[in-house]
Length: 476
Image 1 (cartoon, helix red, strand yellow):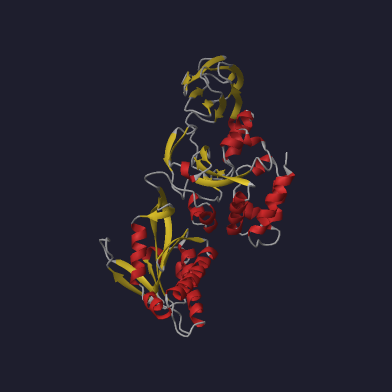
Image 2 (cartoon, rainbow, N blue to C red):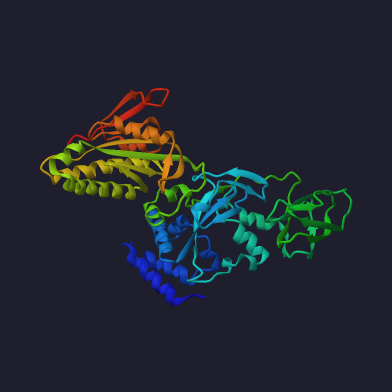
């Protein structure tokens, strides 16, 4: 089921895209050729990096380049935090929305780019066909446990929730419109839960000794509703006669719950590529410029660290060496700042004149990048007769809104405003950071070698004085 010609052509394009670490592309080729269908469906690049001993950032870049080469398709998933159900998936950010309802949990959620939005990669059907490309043809078991549920949801003891859920299933089948399925189960004390996996239709049936012995249980499913919605039965054999009175096929299961008051614990998840991290990946911003956030309110980002930079005295530079020469030199400075951001898992969001705005998932990465930016600009000065480049840097951390402005993925809100104003407080060669950044994990250790002065500052639009830490260069 592999198109060898297309696979070879696209692997060649991937290899030529950039300088990869040794054997990175060959590891991906091995997966494409010999991986099971499940291994090629909704691949988690963070997990792939761990399994193949590849740096996370390179693994993410690998799959993004592989998408551009036509080897994979990218999916944005809305994942239920209670049951790891993939409630909806989208091939493009443009169609992503953040308010979703899980039929299995019958709960509503608001997703942020940090949480509940995962990005995965599935082999392109043009390269290799796998059964998950045709979900309507899947068995009921495959549909529920490989297509619907993500494997990354873990119980508090570390056991995969999908494996725990498999142990609860007593019957699982696909029922066509107008058809009837007879499902016999051996009911134990606790409760039985009948579930349509594509709607809110559920029937909850307590099972207790002393209840009426019920050997036959008719169930009608229609338009997202289930009759009966409740009943009481005694332990023993029960035949469920399930009729699909609707117009669409359904996947129906009967689960044995240990108690009538069974509550699923809140899951934790193995590390995955979040929407937030993807938007802060430079390769994504470079290759997927057409991706936009169409939601009018944008998408929340709960925690982002922003770095603003600006060149001090650039106007004098333009006047002294001329517009063309100054422009060329400023572009060199941009290239160095971009490289520093990428090396520390960030991305340049935009440039404004001689200024740069970059975003990072963690404040530690942002600070490492800011310090490297300052040193990179100082290296530029060493090749010049005088110090033409003097960088001012401001760093702030907080919540923001990811939006599309001027056909560019951007960030909006008070965190952005404060970060820009903190940069204005910096003197030449100085990095100014807020208390939110200073108190973030690992930041104090990173900046420990640098002379630091704490001052209080009044910022426009902020009601209270803000603590600002001024980081000077280390004495040479």
